[in-house]
Image (tube, rainbow, N blue to C red; front, side, top):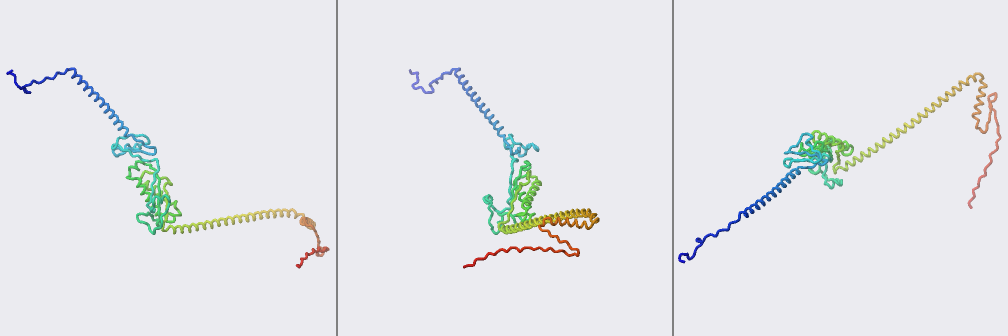
Length: 376
């Protein structure tokens, strides 16, 4: 045993060999991993395809937009309208565009009426006061920068406001030729108010001729709209105005207006009376003239008949004047005394004196008087 070492170290120990694996088991493990990886890749590819399809669909449908019946749309590509002339206007319905910022859409409401109001010449008023129609109290002065007013042609101060309704007739010009067409129309309406005020005196603008004042404002608005080519249409009657005197002098204006109205009433009454008196006079004159014409015609007819009768009797008178006179007298007496109850005939005597007929008439009976009883 001398030849054997007493304590053998680890370096001296021989390594323990691993048992060798079978080749078929190694290949089975590799096939399962490859199959799992292949299935994972196939699932990932399907998911990616679905995501890509969803992204494509979302891309396509994100560009779909609807134009309502009362609208016109303009498609902008990189800030410029797409198409030329009428092709730029997209009618109501479904349309498609590229995503923003490549394409953008401007919807213009052309089928509805728009309204702007000018209060540049109106007094300060809260929305509640405007809704209830309450007027401001007299303050002794106008507040600078708060109360608006206009100057009339005779140098008076009045308050004036206007409301205008319009429709868009040229969408491209209205939307793209001006930074803000609504503000432009507001300034046009302000200009028209001051323009009309300068051409009317205070009485006409406030009371006597308010309709002409409104028509002047509307004519000025249409003139400026056509001159500037704003792209809107203002129909007759779509501009309405209102005018009022300042609160401090409103009572004085009212006194003048009442006096003028009373004067107009008196003038109308006088004209009515004059027309009535003239008509009555003309009627009476017509009656008198008609009566005169009737009497004249009757007299002419009577004279003509008498003349004809005289012409017929003249030969008979010429043949025997005495007999003709007696017959004529008898006929006349018969006609005159037809209805006489008593007839007395006193022929003339030969020497020219009339005879006398004496009648004895009894005295009318006396009517007894009633005696008045004496008081006891």
